[in-house]
Length: 390
Image (cartoon, rainbow, N blue to C red; front, side):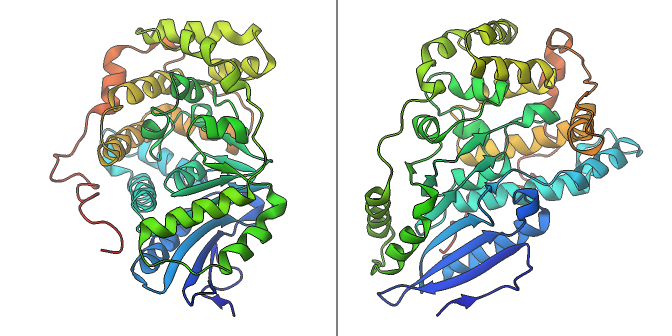
């Protein structure tokens, strides 16, 4: 018998299914199919509440995240309200205080708390990464212990298009991708299929979407151990049994040497110029370079700086630094302008300020790292002090 926890029209649907051993599988479904399950603040809060409850429920053996429909797990964040909040902040007397954009502060801090909760979840946590997985959707998937992607995967971190950087922990998980591919993906927003997502360490296993019901039934037919390590190993084995045959190498892996050569330059301006020079190598590179050339110059340089400076930082430290950087983006012109051009007016002609990477000086980049809080007052000061379920 299915235990339905939420109404059918809720933005996130929660249900519990019994397993053979008497424990239960919790399923959270992002329920915004028309927007490709884009995250809203309400969805974040609902997930936070239920995931904490499941973490502490001894009857829940494991949890699964999925998206409604077949087109996407999650295409990112719903940015309409953020755009309005940025404009209001820019017009206010407190425009120079990044803390004064209260909606942006609420959204980013609560989203990052949720992402960190998933990274530290005490039970097996399976994400079914079908179709589009981008931006905030990657933030959710990255924290799961078992990241399934399908044969229809389109994975990317496309924040450069809107004057933001790959946040939601992107400065952590992209920095751990092979070689210099993390910086390349931040600059170009190149889309990855299943093979490249696994190669980059952004997914664990590819299972055809047509086998989803079969996988679910196999999970429910199992008796799940009480200890987390054994149950995680059992889930890994189960998913491996349903995996597709080895994925063919994708363009990220095929062109790894070219990417490493281009993105290894110590000077960011030289690195960006070398990346642009790849455009004639293949159609995949051409699309990525076109994105880089059309994207925000400020956040191109910011993305490089974040990955390099935070590479040896803990995940907690990364989320704290990303919150300061994200709120600074919201206070400066490019985030509101990027959202306007892409989603509001849809003219795809953003007027970036500064207009080129050459016009972005070191002081401008340093401003993204200048926190208005002491360590004791930071909104994420308590992140990492307690693990869910303990």
